[in-house]
Image (cartoon, rainbow, N blue to C red; front, side, top):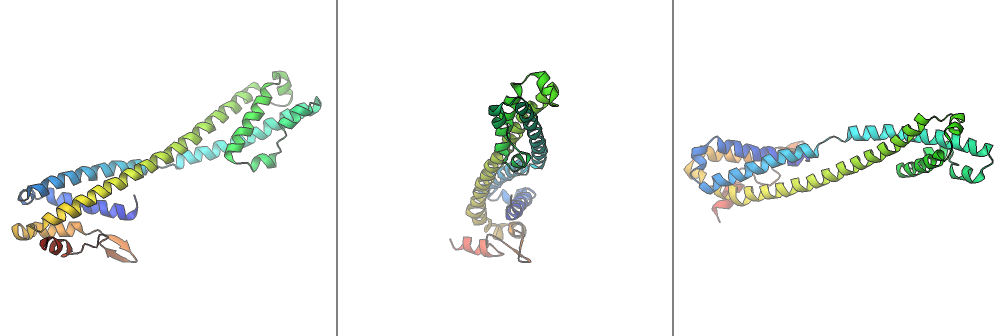
Length: 238
């Protein structure tokens, strides 16, 4: 949620709290009371979605970057080893397949590194374990390289899914705020004017709760442009 949405949610929660703390007052206008219950449900849903939205991607990003560095190192090591073997055997076809200089691999995008790593790994597996060992590559290295490629792919997917999930949650949050705003403006504000006569104390509490404390340019404003008497007087003239 952005800062305004947080301030708006705080205001809506305060409206619910003040209303529930005055059950006899809101009972005088039954529709007001039922609308408060609906607003409370929306507030609770927004709290749940806020937790989902604010899930930190830092951990995923850190793992991704660390594994990417390792993937680059493994790809450089393996391509160099296979190239050395191919050069010894004068296998120009194999040399061209794994001819990736460190500076080239280091400048690749993540997707290109993954593709290159796959090519190098495939070429490596065509050599015997003994030939690879002579070039400094053990069977354990092969397994580690293959595992690293798969792991990096899974992290890329997890990161993308997390971003997609957050986008979906943000959309749901916006829909809930739209629903809440409609309830407050079109029902609660319109009904609240009755409390000016029926329960003046509660009426003042409601108006105070409706103020959205959102600092902009070093001053507090009600972002709905609903200040003090506005909700009341507009409703009274309907």
